[in-house]
Image 1 (cartoon, rainbow, N blue to C red):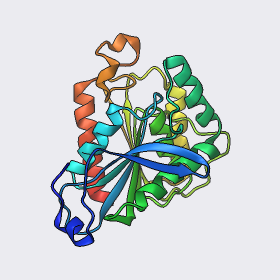
Image 2 (cartoon, rainbow, N blue to C red):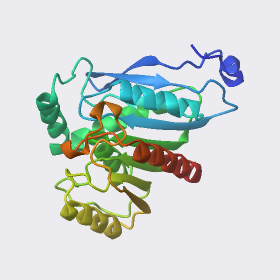
Image 3 (cartoon, rainbow, N blue to C red):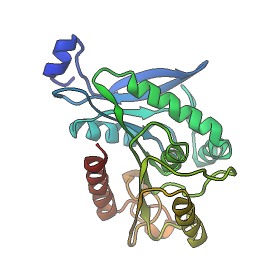
Length: 252
């Protein structure tokens, strides 16, 4: 438990880190994770974190905690549903594919996460962002494509391909894409198509490609062998986190 802030004491609500967060999308129960800053002087920005294809894991919980240390209220969203966690990469691919194939459902779950984030004491609802990793990076971009009420989105090694419906601009949230330059899951054609999409939608976007980085470069659990196409890279992980921090300074 963290030390309650002056703001939380005034509200009579202790600000804690590491709390499970139960919320819902209609009848579907969702099991996320909430992290709050130890000390805040007033309403602070909120950040929604969307998980990779294995669902909410220690990675997303750790990211939420790090965001809380920066002074943000962070919610790790649950896209799949309470108790729905893939046992292996095959199940993960099927689950992720379900939502990538139904972008409206994916967006609905993201909106549910944003509502849960806005409901947290101390969150400034006018200063929100969405970030995501791999499958979640696609979700962050979907939040921008749908013009959800957020100031910006950040995709870490996310899928760049849009859904079947054309993107209707202008895209209002600012966009930061942190991409592995050697990511084998994103062909040059997909990358070029993403740039074309953003230009046509008049998006204010930044695209950063990290040399030598493959898919999953922020995740230590991916191992350190880039020849497999998925691997952690310390330099790209460190630099992309700093780029996110600079981006947040600008949008908030």
